[in-house]
Structure formats: structure tokens, C-alpha cells
Image 1 (cartoon, rainbow, N blue to C red):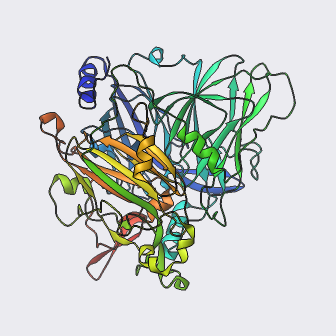
Image 2 (image 1 turned 180 degrees about the horizontal axis):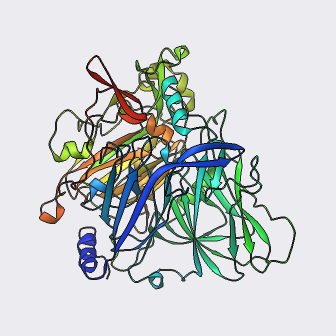
Image 3 (image 1 turned 135 degrees about the vertical axis):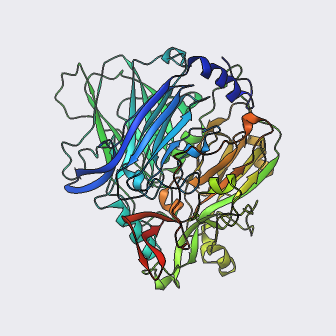
Length: 604
């Protein structure tokens, strides 16, 4: 059945859903797991004692039910990254955005329909840095099965999850960064399917191995689950044909290099057509910052692709990887992808109801009283991140969605600015020392959201800024895919940019890597009532406040109205409110002092 328009996509899928859908059930036990990597042993948080966690496989139209049991000492939420959550926003899993967390010793059942989507998505914890080890693949096949792929059916499908590893406890690292007002320290390694690979210390036996058969075609489902890094990915002596990104089909794009930002997925066909031997697949950081960060993860993770018929005992061949700072290579990949438009598919909306110009970047903010180690040399300023100079504060009394649904006042405002407070030479790095722009380096904190009516077509210009340095920011919107109409470097010039808008077959996805020192234009229609988080998927930047949220009002019919939350929806504990949301408890307990609840917590 073909989907005829954005307004009919879910209605038509629902008709088929009634006839053909399956119930897919999982139980996720979230608890401690002892792991040794790089000669370091520590307890990590994992699902069903696996990291990466279990892969979820469904067909389009299925209903997915996941019982999440929190046996950790931390609060917990699980986000189903890229799932539309049509009328099921209560299951989106964004901490304090669409739900209060699952408290230690408690559980919550996520239930939602997977409709109008096919391809590779993923799931992950959406609270502090817990997603370092709490993540897994979410694979959606066509309702009719693999025969319905709009590309040759592969021999096998292989999930490849790229991640990061810290030798020390990530919650302690995150807490230290908050107390000092600085960024979190860099990871100690990258990983492929949980394995760092044999270039790292004590890791000669900790290398993922993929067995392939000569002449066969494999669908490689690549997921960037790294917390803070964009990545280059290659397999020696092999090439790819990209056929989808973020569960959106693309026109076939041939390349030997994949570039992938945190939160993004890439589906690519790989033919095992090299001489039978062993070859390395490898990933290393794309360091987009300019000037470059003084310290970044300058190491390489690698795995082995081994031909079953290989007779050679030679060492595996290593791919020729780009340099860390190869922005032209990254931009070439991102800007050459286009969307596959099949008969009956939705097309780009041409009439725009709402336009926003949103600057994204870093800055500073006053240190909070609870930031006891905040750097005095910066004049008691803490590093911050913002959109239009607004630095997001998570609510602490009630999730945004519940506050919206129950019309609770005082949790958020809907005054997110449509444009930046000051227009200046946004991408000029030399302006960092311009004292006239000093007010821009200090962000305004608040929980400021964007209010939109149902069925509004929104166009957003995302403009990078050079305050404290330029870098690429992967911006993710929950509950929606969007069209990327254009992207480029420097300051956005509407008159020039509009000439290059792709209104015929633009790429569609849920996370856009805005070019370093540049801009991107996205467009989408709000046919999904609820509250949807918009944020940078570099978790350090999210912690620093680079976020807002969309408030999408109910539509005109009963099928366009957000239903009430489920009976087991997690409740927020009433807490003494601090400047930022209290995300997780170090002990899972609270103590009373002078008749006030004092939480053993620290903010995101």
C-alpha cells in the first residue's frame, strides 16, 4: 500500500496495521555488568547483561512492547531514537521531556506502534551519559519482508554499532564536569559492536570479527552510538552503496567512506568482492572543531572482515583513513546524499507557515552555587551551550509532556526566540575576542519551548556560530523526520541559498550534522501532537543546554489528539528544585535535613 501524503501516512498505515500487525514483546532488565577493557575493570549499566544491548527487530506496522525493569542505582529512561511515536509520546523516553524517570527498583512498559517507517533506527538511555553502554539496534523491515526492499535483497544483514568507552565511571566523570563548569573528559577508546580492537592497550583479543562469503552482498546497518564524536568509517579494499539513512531510503550513493554523526544511522550495501583474505574495518574521529580541540580522541577502533574461503596468513589490510580534520570529505558525503522518492511517497511541502532562524553554539553562563569547583579564572563562569542564546534547563517537578497535557503552569514557557538576539558575523572566529559581543558569550537560561499548531509546515535555518570556536553540531528532532533542503559554509544568505534548495529529492532524516562554521535548512510538517525534544546529539553539548522542544497542539479530529498517559506512567518525586533538573541518584536514596528533601544528585 502506497502512502499518499503526510496527512494520510499514518491513517493508511493504521488500516493495514489492523489486518497484519504483530505484537513484538521484550523484557529489558537494566542492571550492573562488570566489564574489563583496556586493562581496566569497572561496573557498567547494561540491558540483559549485554553491551551493546539486544537488537530489536520488527516489521513496519508491528506494535512493540518493552517492559523496562530498572535494577540500577540510577534513574532511567529509554528512548526509541527516530520512532515517530504517533499518539504515543508518553513512550518517547526523553527524561523530564516526555516522562519522569523510572526510579531504581521500578519498571515501566513502553508500548508503541511502528508505522510508516522502514530501515535502521536504535534505542538508548536518555539520561546523562548512561547511553555509553545502554543502547542497541532497532531494525524495521518492510511489512512484506525483505523482498520489498527498494534495492537488491542482501545475502545477510549486519548491524555495526560504533561506540565509545571510558576507563572510569561515566557518571562520576559527568558529575566532575558539572562541578567544575567544564566539558566532560574525552573517551579512552572507540568501539565496534562493543569491542575496541587490537590497536588499544590490552585489546589484542577484544576485536570484533565479521565472517563473509566471497561474492555475496551484505546490508551493513551502521549506527553511531558514540556519546560525543562524529566518525569516519571504512573497510579496506571495499566500497559501499548507501541505500538509507535514519530509516529513510536514499538514492543509491556509491562511496568507500561513511561519515556518521552521533545519533545517525546509515544502511549500506557491501559486496564481498575483494580477493579472499582478511581486511580491517576501522573508525576514527571526525574532529570538526576550528580551532581544533587541544585534546580529542585521536585513536582508531578496528574490526576484522574475514573471508570464509581465505587461505592467506598475511596480516589484515588496513584502510586508508581520512585525517581527523577532513571537513571537505565529511561535507562531500553529507551533501551528496539525496532522498529516494517512489510513486505515492510524501513530497516536500512547498508552502511554509512558520520560519525560524536558530543559531547553535557554545558560550558561558554564571556558575551555579552547586558547582563548587567552577573555574574562578573564568570569572566564575561555566561553559554553556545554547540555541539563539537560550540555554535549556530541564524541569525538575514534572515532565514537559505531562505539564502540557494537564495544563500545569510554571514548568515551561513558549517564548523561544524565532531569531537570535543579535545579528553578527556568526562564523568569524576572530570575533571571539570582540568585547562588543561579550553579551553573546553569556547565555540566558530557561525552559523555553516553541509552540506550533497542528499541521504547521516549519522551516528552520540552523546557523553555526564561532563563539568559543566553530564545530559541527548534530541536531536531532524527536517524533519527526525532516527534509534537508540545503547546507553550506559561512553565514546563511537566504537569497543565495534558496537558489540551491533541493525541492525535488532532498535527503530526509531525523538528525542533521550542521556543517562546521556553516548552516543547514530543514523543513517538516507538524502532524504529531505532543512535546518533542530538539537537541544536539553530542551529549556534552546537551548537558550544557543546547536544546529546546516543540509543543505541537492537538489536531482537529479524534485521531489527532494525544491520549492520556498509560496507568504505569512513572511519577515524578516532588523535590526541592535546584537550578537544573536532578537526574539521577548516586545512592538511589534521599536524605532529610531541616524538613527539606535533599537529593544525592547532580544536574545534567
